[in-house]
Image (cartoon, rainbow, N blue to C red; front, side, top):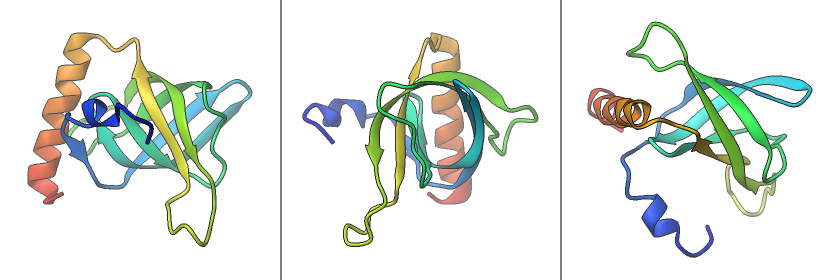
Length: 118
């Protein structure tokens, strides 16, 4: 990641596959979020959206009945490259997230880390 990523990574992160649906202009897609925190997520996909694309996200967390709706922006893309051994996909930074929702996500991530052993 670019310089300054250390500050972005201080939040608790859940390394676990969770189903996620997302919408951008003209498309509605489903994939797996493989890394989630209070500030964003990484979506594992072979067809990432371009950096800067705004997305609407629905994520189903195991501890909540209804999916959580969030807004985000694609901040990085990792393409398919067999030599690199990197998981293809895109990093999403949550946007317009209120403090109570951010706190709820942080609490859920910590609880899931404990319950799932991540």
